[in-house]
Length: 362
Image 1 (cartoon, one colour):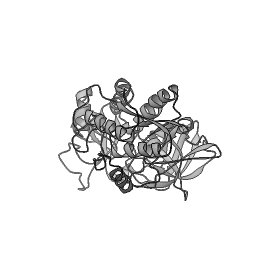
Image 2 (cartoon, rainbow, N blue to C red; image 1 turned 180 degrees about the vertical axis):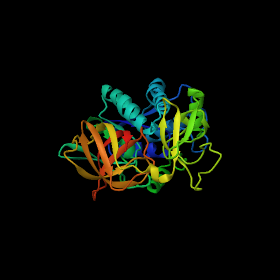
Image 3 (cartoon, rainbow, N blue to C red; image 1 turned 45 degrees about the vertical axis):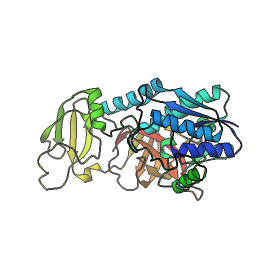
Image 4 (cartoon, rainbow, N blue to C red; image 1 turned 90 degrees about the vertical axis):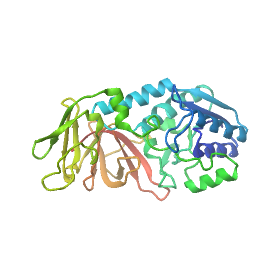
């Protein structure tokens, strides 16, 4: 196959590209320039897509003996990921920019361009398993559960998965680093990136405040209705948040308060005790079925609501075109704007059934 290897400059995408070459594919490397003003240096494990990362990717491509290009996707990334991120927070939702980047950049814009240029597939360093059963794609959790990225890939369509390669799905991170060392790749010990790539200092609240400005509102006790203070904007909060609320006095019973809900139109942030965070029903819009098989009736499954969060047994069904998920026990910290991903336990690795964007909770 003709394979386009997306090379971020990190160890995972480097080893994924090397394995694609070793498998006999005709591989071309590409680094995505996602910032109009990329920094020249990373700050440890913060930030990505810098000039340094592009150079690291090129050195790996040279060592592998494959052609290498840098494609400018900065404008598309700004519109589809950064501006969407800001707009979602302004609307009182909590988005996942990594999921949006995979959906709109790596497996839409990049894949579309790759296919138009005659490539058969895009290869990435994601930790997820991908197979085919009865002609249908099967997206599963990675062998390395600590690094599993099937959650942020669960919004991909069967057509996109049919043109994707995830060579690291059966490996654990330590094996990948050891292989990179054995291959003589200089990125073998390069730190993993974390946090949000376009906020390298990690200060999300300051980033949003700079773009949205001050939007004052009230902090309200959900139990008593008392006004506890004022804030600079609902974009500085997320459901389930405990710290940094700006409340001077503790609750009368001495227990901590959490953000329970956000009301962007009124500018109200409602806070209260942990038990009021419990959610027994999740309603998600825009359901996507990676295997091409929508739910039929009520299905018992496992639900995950955060990229690095735990899972819980649940039942799920489609009601009036929306995905309705009922956790077996109350979930806490479920925020609109996040994705809910459904899995079916399987000996070969948990199978991704589908996903949807959380619109409401009850």
